Length: 485
Image 1: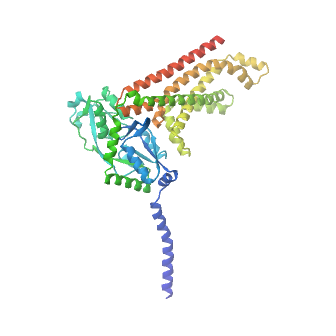
Image 2 (image 1 turned 30 degrees about the vertical axis):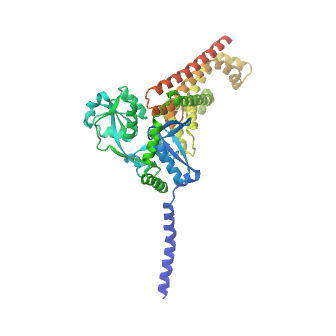
Image 3 (image 1 turned 45 degrees about the horizontal axis):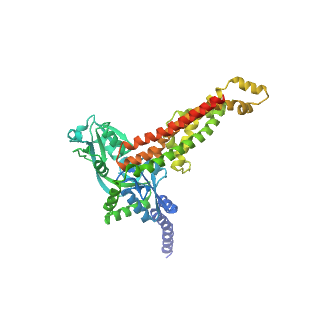
């Protein structure tokens, strides 16, 4: 009897210990931090590259610039099913995975296919579409390419970090692969004979062939050319994955995708005048470009002034810090600095917007160059001026403030104006993280209008007007300063 009671007590204790353990694990499987964040914020942030019609592209809807496409319809369906608002975060295609891994976005819905390399970094949903990869060539070259063996030493274009790029490298034997960020750029290169073939996804290729009658399909098929398109999400997000898969299952069951595609196709080929349709894009882009340049030069001038004084000081620590910063920034590409600010700040807990990150990166970059401009301006003032000020009883800071800097400004201002012109042009680099400046808007127009060349001609003219006008104003200022002399 005692043994039976003791056995019962042991079983009860063991069961009491295990029940919470299993209950905890069951509960853990029913939730994840990524899903909880979406529910807490009340919004689903979807990352995409909106130059990939009919998946996602820009169109003017009710007079407003809007990102549309059947991927947007899928994203809206998922957001509705989750009971949250949809927020679209537009980035370059090669920046999407970085944005997902650093928590800038919750999902990638941008015609992306699961690959072994991508699966190491992120998870994917069930596929929502199966597509064929196609080879596009100029009509005059169609007979040259009849199999994958005909591409030896042939220049082939593909989108960077895409399934098409992988196919070009693995199946088009001996081809010379040119990887570009945007599909419209690939079409431009093909039409202008910079490349001789391009690998593009079926639905996208159909759209471009409809607008470019001088291009056609090559009679080439890939062994692994059938790819499934799915939705990328963070690793270890079981609940989010389950919810997304449920939405995809319903889309397939109710056959919603053909309707989504029909809506996208209707928006792709609008008969409005080009300038009526896309004029607002350029106005918006020019505004952002000027804003970026002003912020970059203004805060760059403040930072540069401080760095210049630090470099000229007698304090060895200040001189060392200023010298290291200036040499590092001047010795690294602005593109790298933009990525470091946008993605790197997430590591230290800062969630910067695209515009904020772009402004900070430009200001930090400009500061290094302005520092050298200010330093050179100060050193151009005759040393006798400083000695005269000291002989009058001024200390070093007073001499710098009242005697040296007022004279140095006449040397600094023209060079600072040239830095403004430079920043206007360099601001185009921030388009890679989705800031809607001129180059970014040109890419949007390119993807939406299927006109690969005209959008960039217009952008070049706008840049010229901005820089030429500013150069003339600087010339007027310099002449007035000379007159005062």
